[in-house]
Amino acid sequence: MKQRMPLPRAIASWLLAAFLTACSQAVPTPVESAHAAPPRKTTDAAAPKIVVHRDAYCGCCHLWVEHLRKEGFTVDDRVEDAMSPVKERLGIVPAHASCHTAEIEGYVVEGHVPASDIRRLLREKPAIRGLVLPGMPLGSPGMEVDGVDAPPYTVLALGKDGSTKPYAEHTP
Image 1: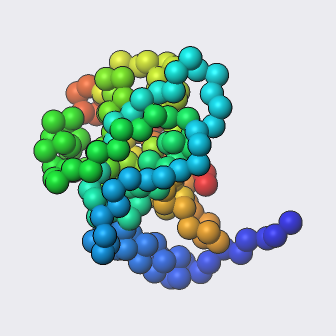
Image 2: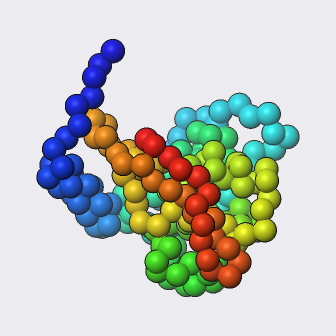
């Protein structure tokens, strides 16, 4: 079994900063859509349909779309000219923001939330606005970096009043 050695804190911090900077910088060509492997088999009668709003120039949003497709979601991948109006319409404040915003069955999903959390949301149907994963946590779906030990992250439940509370803990 291959043993992974943790990187020194300074190197890990530099890698994270470089990765996040690269994700936020324009790429030469817009990423029009993510192409993924065929969706996994699901026992659901129909694959959940999710609308993803994203910027054409983000380098990681299409990786999250690919994650959803691999997990059996049907994705309507919408490249937006501006994300601010989308976030405002869906009630996402800057403190909760990430690089992409999704809508599914009346819920909002902000950021690199794992498909398993979205499935749980759809199964349990809590009386909340949705799920948020602020920023772009290293190790979350679409933000994986091979060979780097990512820190744990917490997906938050977004209340209808804008409050948040922990929904799911993840250790990549």
